[in-house]
Image 1 (cartoon, one colour):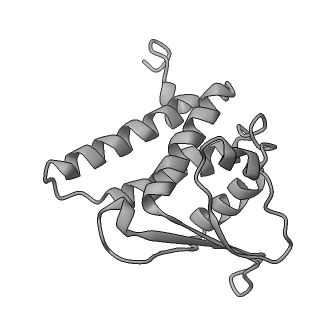
Image 2: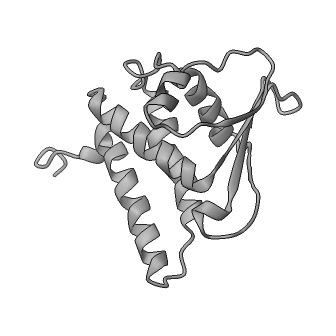
Length: 160
């Protein structure tokens, strides 16, 4: 049966294209009064946009984009709290830290609020559980904007 229909969710592109749609659905449902948590869905979206593509090398065409230039192009700016090696200059550097933070549950929320604009999310990374050498935070609504921009860049790169 699997040979009869293409399984798009098996591709990086197919899976990553579903992530923003699912997130927007949750946001829309919350606005209509559903008991859903858009902040939780936003963080879950990082699996499909950052972790999975990172693991299969799908970020090759976008990893060298300069973070300063991206900010000038409308991408949200992350608040760097710690960058001991001063090595977070490109989208690839940031996604490496985010991949590690999300994969190892190195993140925390400023509150349990369900509204994206009411929550800051802090991420951290380091060579071991006991050592942190990078920390950054971003408001939930800006992380949503980052995810939208990232999904667009990933799509435009032709990552499959």
